[in-house]
Length: 444
Image (cartoon, rainbow, N blue to C red; front, side, top):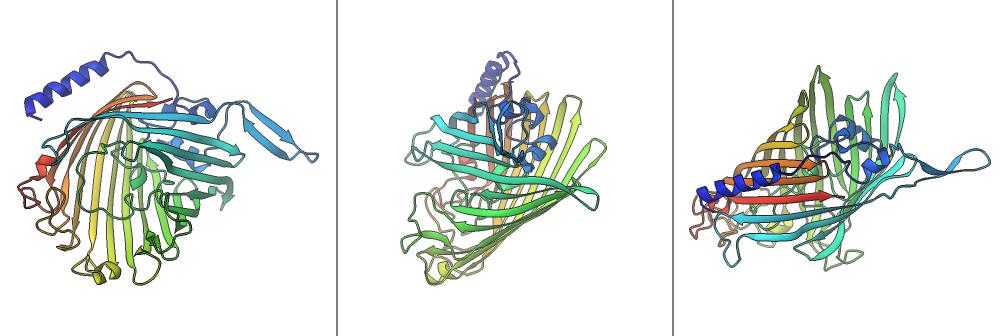
């Protein structure tokens, strides 16, 4: 897309969304249960604020509406059901333009829908709640189980300080996290499904999503220190059950996940700094023989500061992935058996009255060269054999209603699969993969 055409297109979209009148409605599900607007839990959905983080930690069980209660002869509560429906839906419709057409494809792609999700969310019993998402994906043209987090939570005191503790059963490491700096809920909160993607990413950045099941224990002490330990096992969606010789990417035993964070307020300034990670040993194919091992260790940082009715947030993370690719190396898929990978992301957001949002992010992927693991190929490969990619993401969002978001996103690559120019050996440059993405995001 030429620069002048892009500017005209951007201005047209901005004028259209700014002409829509502003109204304030609560988002579905959790808002119906709590009788609170979505601004109580979010800056701009799905980014959580302080109250939203506590709501999630307490198992999605805060209730401010009438319920159906049944007690036994000892006055124990044996049933507590919400009278309001806990079903919600979300729809994303989008348009994508790639700077240079992907070979063999049609550019200027419309997705209607890009994604359609049905949610079951909220209190199941006192102290047990859930966030369950079932999603229709435009690439697979089918519904499947998406992000899911089922919790038991309770409160007590420890050393005369508050203690929130609980269990989480989920299917995506970091989906249970309460900050927007870890992969499952990190920026960008929506992105095109048809744009080019770098050749490499760390395993924890979506490589296990919806293909595992994990049980963890967590606690937040004195609203200051958060800790969690979870264990994951393979649970492939659509694959053989139980896994057999035809399975791929099967965890050998159990994969641990850990999270430790410190949060505090200094006046109107909110800070969080933490670490998270996982160690996964898996069979690339079948259930016997050599394995590949991935150890991902991450650090993250969050900052929030209100400015009257406006708010600034900052999220950053760095992940180091150490690999031991015995199985891949032995099968001829890698030059060495221990290439490392690094992923760095940072984004700053400024939200005006929870209605207009401006975001600017930077991302960088670096790693050891390996001409087999990152093999040359037209468009998708790396002529240098390195995974290095980086760029910026600029985004503008407008919420005429609290449950409706219109956004435009521009992704600009400075490097792609190892180089800024001729990265694939066939003349394609990193900037050829720049993209414009326009989305209408509705929740009801």
